[in-house]
Amino acid sequence: MRALAGALLSLLLRVLLTSTPHALGANPGLVARITDKGLEYVAREGSVALQKELLRITLPDFTGDFKIKPFGRGHYEFHSLSLHSCELRGSALTPLPGQGLSLTISDSFVRVQGKWKVRKAFVKLDGSFDVQVKGITISVNLLLGREPSGRPTITASGCSSHIRDVEVDVSGDLGWLLNLFHNHIESKFRRMLESKICEMLQNSVTSDLQPYLQTLPVTTEIDSFADIDYSLMEAPRATAQMLDVMFKGEIFNRHHYSPVTFLAPVMSLPEQHDRMVYFAISDYVFNTASLVYHELGYLNFSITDDMVPPSSNIRLTTKSFRPFAPRLARLYPNMNLELQGAMASAPFLNFSPGNLSSTPLIDIEAFVLLPSSVREPVFRLGVATNMSAMLTFNTSKITGLLKPGKIQVELKESKVGVFNVALLEGLLNYYILRTLYPKVNEKLAEGFPLPLLKDIRLYDPVIEIHKDFLFLGTNLQYMRA
Image (cartoon, rainbow, N blue to C red):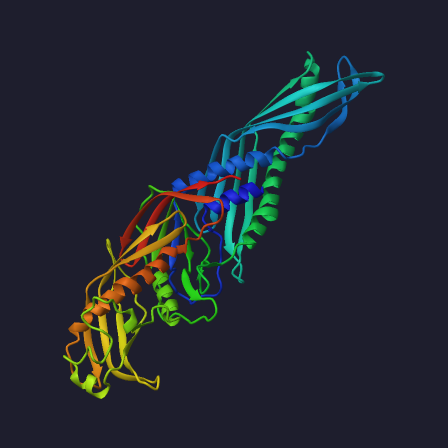
């Protein structure tokens, strides 16, 4: 049943991951919605795995005594029974509101082959037989839950199996032997096979599916600093046509966790069913990442004169500042300057229909590099810029790209008098375009992984930007080993 476990669990996109304790009433940062189309695909893949499992069922021998006219009393054995072929023709996986999923398989077929032996006094007869079991119906509920520890649970409940028809063919023209089978064995055979099918399902869920769930991590590594928490906020929520899975979706510093001071927004998901699965990824996911890298100082920078291009009209020297900041040149003659920049706060992404933007604010402090190697602060700048963003999907990760906007520079404090900071805009714009943007885009290109298990390929994606969240629809393909 491990193949079935892989198929179901991978295709349900970590449906049964669970969580560590979370704040009461908090909203999920990411929601995975499996549609009826996705559940249909899972059911088809699951039936393929089930066929293999059914062929592994071991069947008992049937022995006993008989009394048939005109032969009188004797002893029979139907032994060496084996499932030769199996065809599961109709399967469906449907939501079971408030509980989980219901798996049903109907109009299926199994062929059993074996040997027979009859003994009466000193007379022995033997041969082979073939049983065609038709109209098999299987039904089982898969109850999805969550342990207090945050680990997933799955249990099989209410399994039933029914056989509509049994046809037997025995070697030789032995009508009495057929009657023997129908009269003495068929009912036992039906009950045995129906019981074996449900036993196989129960054991597979307990022995394969549940342990497989327990090995799933609730966090996924992004890079050497950050992880993303993909624990469930609650048990999967089944409705009439879909299954919603609520993930925490918080990106955090692996080495130093800081509580997030804002909540994920409430997301109103569109009613779409064209794809097998939809991911609603809120701004919370991206903005918790921004907090992590801001606290790490990832976007802090410094600019010195040797970094200024030769063609620049202004150098980072006090001499170059003489025409518009004469006091600076007078107080610190022929000395170099250094600009140190940092984000005033973590730059957040803003989601609006069809649009992604950010308005980061940068604080820049200028220092004079004294001969004693001491840095003397001389003025402070504020830099504002509007930028747009583009998010893409590359089979398993969400990646991004920032597009630069115009910058505005403001003199916020000066110890060397007021001066026209517009002259610095060109220099700062050059640095931001050539250094800061590429650094950020390099990190965005690494992306962050979606909550997927191995052996799943996503294809045919479509991306929409809604208020407060990204909506990604895609189809699935299970890559069988």
